[in-house]
Image 1 (cartoon, helix red, strand yellow):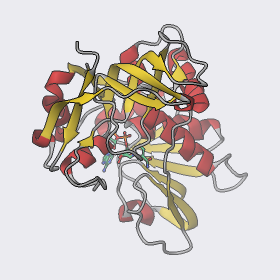
Image 2 (cartoon, helix red, strand yellow):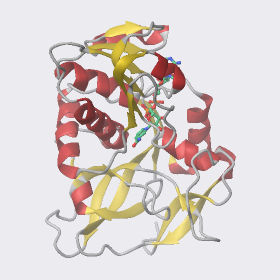
Image 3 (spheres, protein in one colour):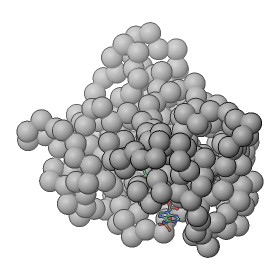
Image 4 (cartoon, protein in one colour):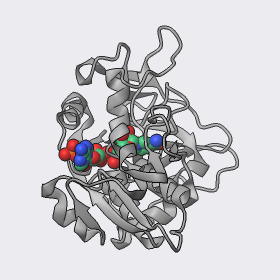
Length: 303
Ligand SMILES: NC(=O)c1ccc[n+]([C@@H]2O[C@H](COP(=O)([O-])OP(=O)(O)OC[C@H]3O[C@@H](n4cnc5c(N)ncnc54)[C@H](OP(=O)(O)O)[C@@H]3O)[C@@H](O)[C@H]2O)c1
């Protein structure tokens, strides 16, 4: 492997998985407070597919490609000034998406040291790579909904078999909510295994709906008057009605929070599932697999 360059999955003209390219880019040096990671595994999120297909337009300088990939696990390869992490430490994290030229579907990437978490002993890199964005988002949803009140504790999670939805179900239950997970019939055992009820269809009247299946207006119609809808697609929320508080989560990297979440994954108290692991060279097929639907857990690519 050439240490002066890194392979990076990019898209120049978004057009779905077929528009992805694996190109060589120069290896960046970490600045103050930053680390360079040799990527061990990188998950593909629905968000990556949205960028690759153009459903999520990314502002980018003319002539410059968009780098794909948020989630990663790997090993600290180089550190900038003021970084306590040692070279060789096993870490995981996610790229915040603010810089379209930085992505985790690559051999290497530079990130802020405060955004990564050290892997707990025994947690394998593939599972660690599947967790950061989804579980951080779930924890940030749990923060938004807070502890359940005395009255009005019925919370519906749409897409409860998904990465974000399953973790929201667990965390909300722990915060005292009476949680039902909306998911396919084939997901019933998994959803019940999270310690919550399962439904394939439901009726209106929920105090809170967390919409990880992106049902939009349909999810809003399930919220009682004056209740709350927490979406997962910022800027694409349905228009508020009937006094319903409508908002969305915008997840941000948070190393200490991720460390707590990974410890729970390692202990088996938060779900993390791998659907498939494929070489980075097969990234187009990996995105196709996700685009086909019905994926349970993450598809990860391995540099
Ligand atoms: N705002 C943020 O910062 C942020 C961060 C992370 C993720 N997200 C977004 O959050 C959403 C969920 O992400 P994820 O990673 O959890 O995705 P995921 O793992 O693919 O889960 C989505 C789940 O929803 C299910 N689903 C879809 N329509 C359904 C329906 N009508 N009834 C029941 N289940 C349904 C899917 O099942 P099928 O496969 O059978 O359809 C799948 O199990 C995505 O839109 C993602 O982009 C946002």
